[in-house]
Length: 145
Image 1 (cartoon, rainbow, N blue to C red):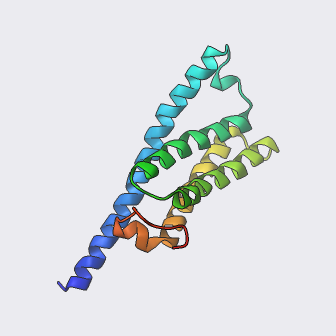
Image 2: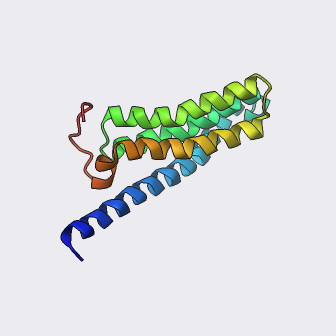
């Protein structure tokens, strides 16, 4: 195996591992932050289930985005990359919430749309910045790169 082929295979593995890592953090964070959200609602005398369906979709998106951004920050990604990834998650969230608010789809369908658009959205952002995500080197990356 040539060095360039070995490096290319290693880069693809790093890229795939990073994507998988982000999806795991997103879903784990969704569980943790949804639990925290439930506690906050209970503390003020209401519940997550009492909220408007569109708002529940928005909260779900926030509960997935916040841990993702925290993880990326901890892993050394610069703020510009964190914002790009947050946008890839929040745009589908707002679209789905809008569809729910307009009565075009129900909450369950809205959340399905949210997730089905969010995962490829994250992948598109990563492919756009392939070299950075595949290299495993995030420290010192500037917003201009």
